Length: 458
Image 1 (cartoon, rainbow, N blue to C red):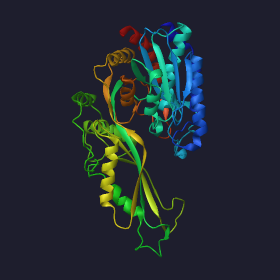
Image 2 (image 1 turned 180 degrees about the horizontal axis):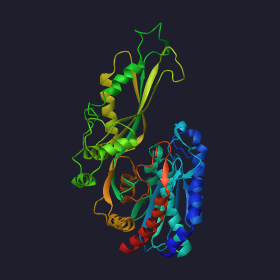
Image 3 (image 1 turned 30 degrees about the horizontal axis):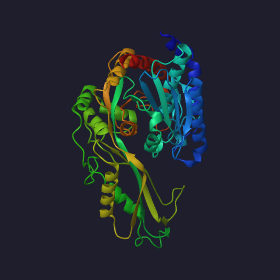
Image 4 (image 1 turned 90 degrees about the vertical axis):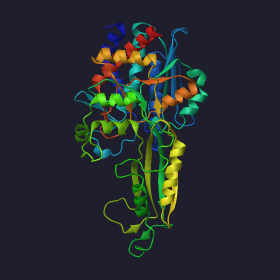
């Protein structure tokens, strides 16, 4: 092993304690009740960068939660890479589904369980620890390294593009490497070369101006729950695909190379449904069909629905309103504004008399992103993974959304690729999120090798 790798190995227990400390901070970005946790997480990242040897460490004002910046400029003549990640996490609800408290990290069976440990605190901490190892073992990095760690990724990154524009000169680099993202499967190395876009909004249907007694007014007063149920049922066809006119405007057939990767994967659809604890639907017969839907087709999902009495027992009431939270995952060619427009038109055209409709959008949304398949650094990263994991990585798409790729291209004029050591089965965004400690170790070695190989290749 190199001196850097030896350092990482000898200090792994300390790295694990750092990760546990990071995960104890409840940095939920979507809920104002967690504002103190956001502030503590930003301070933790800034402090950890400083201890690792980064200079010019600063919490950047964004108009929302701060982003954290730091840099190590070894030699202006060397290539400069910008590492991206995020310190915010998803809400931990429902609490009763967690086996251990979400913000009390629990180590068991080679895994660390905590909210945010896989998305993105574990993967984010890795390049920081690797930079520290280089500084301690060799006194310098083989490349120039900058980091930009945002605090709003889990709430749609509403201020991210503005942040890139404001701090464009400080963030200038040759290439962006994202520590956010995930490998597709724990048993097969992969490189994510595409991700879907996202737009989120909430639909509210209102009937009477106040809640009404369901005995006195039942049968005559408008019931928003009933109206909303009919509306959202109309958004999909029998096969589960989105049935909104104009939803696919601007799209084109998928990249044949991704289709080839799907076919080469020989994915087991039956095993997938067993793993998630669900019967397999009739509309999805094969693994090929499943992956095409997950990676290459747009979606419209209901994330939460409310209306009327939600407590225990019963309450005889016709509610004044009912609402549903919706997120749409977008493929290349779809525009967030257009998607909201066509969904709005669809719902308004089907709204029954006696009701009012309101659509509240959450953030600007983001378009889908595709990496240049001929990007030289992508090949270097694949070689590193192949050497470490014993087989060449599969190029895959991602059903989830990481909006940074298109944003960096637009505002910094540079490409980005994903180099994360989470895997897609680690229950991020769900109760009992975990991070494999073996991946934590492998990720440290891989980042150390990646920086050295990038220096040699550029």
